[in-house]
Length: 144
Image (cartoon, rainbow, N blue to C red):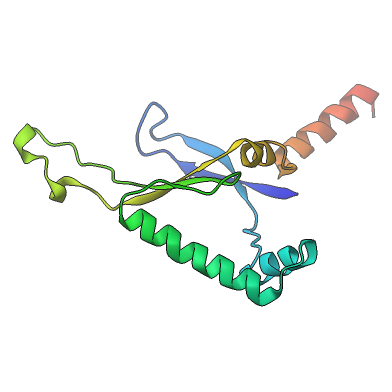
């Protein structure tokens, strides 16, 4: 389960400028280590730990090579990776150059099963304000 907590901040731009807004943030960033991934693959296949680690290390090297060459890299049921270069907005067409490109980002586009896994993940938001309000409402409803 992914647990969230409530945070607040004061908006500095937009329609809610100056207003305090509230949002949910994941409490922790659980990670599955490469070692854990390798071990799970070993447990579910006939591959050795060394074979799995070698395959994943080689995959990482090949993905980097493909991205450097400007390819979108399709990883089957996982999804695809590609490099995206945001661009600065300039006033004149002739001012658009490689220098007007911002820091590149790697974009991951998940396939159906990955999107479905994200949609069906269990989540819980720890919101003390709602619990307090619910308790107050519950007391009033029962006449206590």
